[in-house]
Figure 1: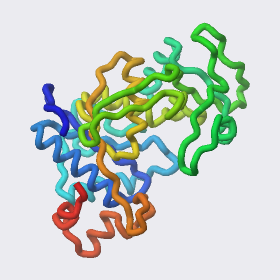
Figure 2: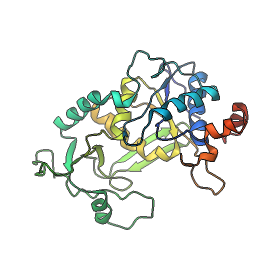
Figure 3: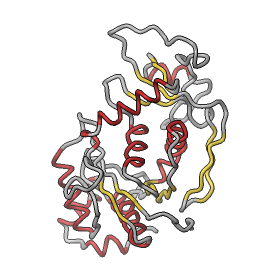
Length: 286
């Protein structure tokens, strides 16, 4: 069980409009809404639409409709606005860039020319399929005073966050209890700004959650390692770290984690087949 919230509770749900929401999304967002209600707090709806190639307005509108049908209500969001406008990440790029520039000026990030293939091939040990390789620090300056790598205009440059060496990142999860990840073992220097001039997920959600006053982040258990990364960003910016509550994942009949391509278990298809919102809620595995 999570500890009692002392400050006014502010939670959030953050769909990514790259497809129709499925049963796993529904369970996580329903838990987030329930926790906000239980703590007599506020719930924020944020649209995480940074991936301009895959995000579509139709999926954004569908997500709002599906969650309203499920009975989830929010106090702030792109459809009803609020004190922290805008609530769409695609409209907050200037804010992300400002934080990026602050991290850059303080020596927390550095440019990297490595491709995904380079990172995989340079990993010190083989990794299982689906497990990310730990970045070996190929482009990392030896210290904050070292000059950055020389780059050409045509180079595809990603900016990485310089993590501390072999440091234990510990946090308490409201659902899974004590968690611990070790830098340069469980993950390496991670990308902050992509070569296509898009801020990374790690940077955007930390900035958003801070700016919007989120006191507890509720999301899927597949993002536990991301939490360790994001805690380092909170430390770097000297911001208060929120609490965390990670939800169990929902699998299909084959035991595989649900994906948006699993249309049979999308909220839209389940609704169209005649299933009720209450039936879906009653069958959540939580």
